[in-house]
Length: 292
Length: 305
Image 1: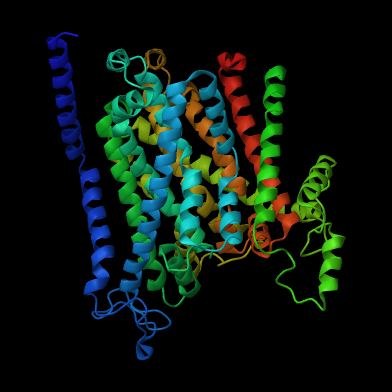
Image 2 (image 1 turned 60 degrees about the vertical axis):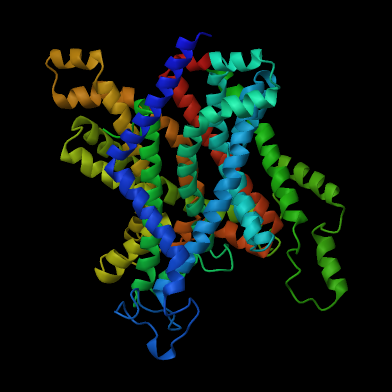
């Protein structure tokens, strides 16, 4: 390979990266979503420390307070401050989201990369397994697992992570398959590198954009699944957004703020993550744009 | 076509087998049994009832017995409510879930498709932006948020609709909407993208040049070509609509199979869990097959895949 070639390739990726950032920053909705997400995460992590109340402080004389200056989101049946409870619920939801998404992405990327890399019959068998997993009623299995083995956080992570990796595996496999024939991969082989270095050092880094995009799109699905389980009373013992919504539904007739604030927090987070994911996808691959 | 159908049907067998096996061992290996929560007069009485349901046999013997029973179409008695067999419970509860699912499907198609077509036809106008914002909101609002909010507004504040009943047709409006809106939103997005692509093709220009009305161009010429991704989405979606209504059944107190499944899981009613999971799995497979058949019907090239 001549040096002219290398320069061309280098300038191409440089320009590519620049245009990705520019394309992303032009998408106002995606940028706003990123800011909103940072704010939500910051307030869930830091907010409870600065609050006058803790999530379990009870004020017997202040039960079912509508939103006011001292209790921004009102109080519940035990006189607990809903604002702090929503922030603490956010901690649980985001915690589960982070770990379970991590599990799902790790399994998905590894599985997809290996399937695509080996190809042939191994690939066929591995992807057939993914097809079968897709056609299983996975929500049913998650429900069975959490109802049976107790409500431990670790189990929840594992159960959610184990069902959400399939899409990632399919996408990464496709990417790796198309990278296999590229010159730089052949060059890596030609230098006599072992297969795992070719795969993990040369091919996988090139799928980073796709991984980032689909991680952002997996996270809201994970949050949704966790909230769904908590809503049905099958989630963790700590009150997450799903649990708060369930409590709110029981009291919504007279005390609608108990339902509205946790619902708004959950919906806003899901919306922001989805919009961010879409924005990133459009930035990385303008041809697949879902927006005008 | 028949060969294609049979070949796909054969693929059911390993998947159903896998579902039965996975569920069976998952449920049995967990701590606690269907009768462990109940107070029995004596150890003997407990052992007696376990013997009655063959629960004292070795696990693999039970597994083998269950498999052969299922092959003969016998799902066994419900362990917690022995007055009816599992098959009878499913016959009683599944039609309710099916009805709810069909209404949901109706909502999804009759809101989603027109919205997508309209947005594509008026691409980049305010109509497009409003519809697509609505679709994004529809995708992001979870049904256990949407359902209670609809109840709050239309049942409690406005008093137009009942809160949680499943008898008269009016009772079914809110549950159907809650179930169908997410799918409507996805269908709107999918059909918009597909319509935009079809509308830019040559044969549409030809149709316009022939002097056809805009309605005919859009609905007779463009829409059929844009249906493929919607059909592909409908398979998994229809299965989800017909089975995954756990939350909607929970919110609106709909006496369907989803409620039964959660009850069974909490009660460790082994046979009931197995029976409902089997129904869900077969439904999902069935709808995937149906979608493949529709695809093959629309696009003959797929038949020899």
